[in-house]
Each structure stands twice: as C-alpha cells, then as structure tokens.
Length: 155
Ligand SMILES: CC(C)(COP(=O)(O)OP(=O)(O)OC[C@H]1O[C@@H](n2cnc3c(N)ncnc32)[C@H](O)[C@@H]1OP(=O)(O)O)[C@@H](O)C(=O)NCCC(=O)NCCS
Image (cartoon, rainbow, N blue to C red; front, side, top):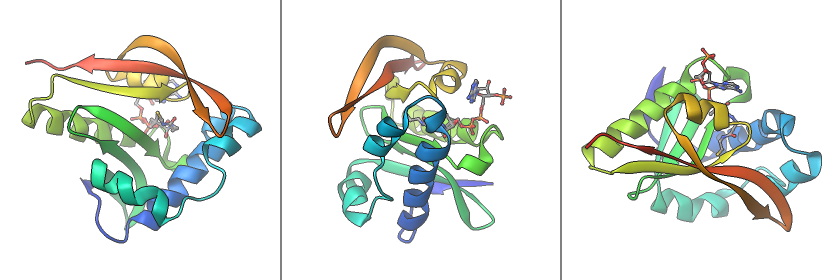
C-alpha cells in the first residue's frame, strides 16, 4: 500500500469513500438523520476545492484505488480522516497517521488535534490522542456528538 500526497484525479475516489464510510461505518454510531445531515450526497468538486487548498491531503492507495485519506493543515489540525468501508481494521488508518505525524515532526508542529467522531475515538486513543472535551458539531441543523482530541508531539 502506498501513502502519498493527493493529486489531480483523486477527487472522485475521495468523495465516494467519504460518503460511503459515513453511511456504512459511522452509521453504527449515528442515526440515519445524522448521517444524512453529515453527508447528504456524494460531494462534488465545489465541496473539495477550498479544502484541497487549505489542507495537505494524503491518500492511501491500493492497486490504484483510494482506500483512505486524511487532511492536515499547518497548525496541526486534522480534519477528514477516513478509511474505505471495506478496508477497515487493516492498518490503513495507522499508516495514514504515521505520515501525518512525520509531517508534523518535520514542520515542528507542537501538537496534532481533531474533532473526532464517536466511531473514530477508539482509533485516535490508540494513536496517543486524549479527549480534551466532548463537543457537538451542527450539520444542516442536526447535532452530532464528537470529541475534541489532541496529541502533543515530542519537541
Ligand atoms: C477511524 C478509522 C479511520 C480507523 O482506520 P482503520 O484503518 O480501520 O484503523 P487501523 O486498522 O489502523 O486500527 C488501528 C487500531 O486502532 C484501534 N481501532 C480502530 N478502529 C477501532 C474501532 N472501531 N473500535 C475499537 N478500536 C479501534 C484498534 O486498536 C486497531 O488495532 P486492531 O485492529 O489491531 O485492534 C476508520 O475506522 C474510519 O474510517 N472510521 C470512520 C470515519 C471516521 O469517523 N473518521 C473520523 C472522522 S473525525
């Protein structure tokens, strides 16, 4: 498996994965109303355009298919962090996180932080993150429970 920066042409794979993972994996922890508010449709290019400028996006690729992706900004904020629904628990998240930590180290970021779904919290805990506080995201007027989590990096 290859972990690499995103490139032109990745958006359809990223978009599909994002939608499917929310509807097929996060749906274990969130109601149908919540997942529909979170991802009502497979997002189009307009959804990603500004994000791709703001974040460094890393993708995990297997046999030419995108099986995971994550977004990191220059402050250490991790936004999206998703693994393909058919590739869960095979170490892809761990590989993506290693890449994020390596980038953070190179760029001397003191900490990584994220607003983490209920679904992903055990993974982030396993990766050395701690809960700072419980939080609620509002998506299309629907509340979604999440956790503000952080991991301080060795200086
Ligand atoms: C969270 C996520 C990215 C983890 O990716 P992954 O590739 O499945 O993670 P890994 O295989 O590297 O898991 C490493 C370890 O984390 C822990 N872990 C991962 N998922 C877990 C779960 N659902 N429950 C408990 N522990 C979990 C385990 O200790 C696991 O090791 P093990 O499989 O040997 O027991 C993935 O489950 C996902 O896409 N979740 C839905 C999307 C999401 O909510 N993203 C975050 C938005 S903030």
